[in-house]
Image 1 (cartoon, rainbow, N blue to C red):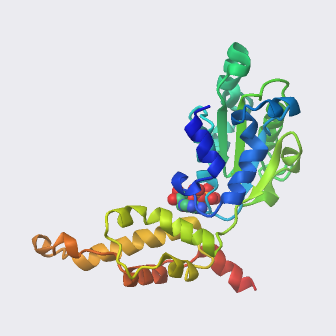
Image 2 (tube, rainbow, N blue to C red):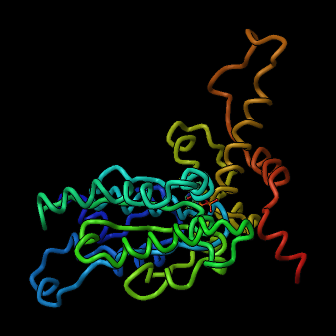
Image 3 (cartoon, rainbow, N blue to C red):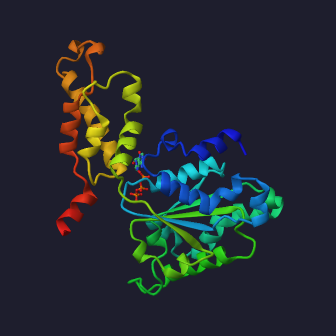
Length: 296
Ligand code: ATP
């Protein structure tokens, strides 16, 4: 294992990895699922620690589930992850379910057969997992296609030696829709909720997404990330990223006169200001938080 990667993980330097506010969640996924792969100490061997076959990341949209899955893959030096999109793949599966599920695992199985323990890790990420693994018998179309997908996936996951070199990460906004059989121990057994970031997390996320403008010295001194974090309760990471993008575009609009582009002002005067951020926060409202507040 690359020692730099090892150190990175030990410190959980998530800011460097571009993940803000998810230290505990990332640590949980990492330890429970994959640590045995990168901690070669003898006690790990003696304990016979095995990585979980599957991890389910669930929570509202835009909270960093895909980020975590991809970063885990990078840290563990996985093969380029296969990303399976729920609804898309579901259509592809029609008529060829078994063949398609078989194909997903075929490369990993072949490498394991050839190299045994030396096989590289293969990561398969299921986006919108609920669309693939709906509770059996619950589909409305009565084709049984969904049931076939679930059954086929279960048989792959349970398959004898097939999954020692495969990591599965499922992601969903609707854990309640997923067939329970697939969430049992030995299958997608590690469930980690990725919720909306708290204030401290939001500061980290703002720091990550303003890194570029801070390094280029174009963020005004009146911008206080702590203050922005206070004003963005219920915002997801993706929405905070949107706020930063929108603030930058407000700055751009203030400075560039589209009718007289050649009269653009001096570079040294261009700054993303607190007012640019305030306008951006007004423009972007948190989808999930708002809905929740209305229910309360
Ligand atoms: P969905 O359920 O809609 O697929 P998701 O939880 O998988 O959403 P991501 O795709 O990981 O969300 O996040 C979208 C983008 O939002 C990321 O590429 C990243 O730029 C930003 N983002 C989300 N969460 C964080 C975070 N905790 N730290 C930094 N950036 C974040």
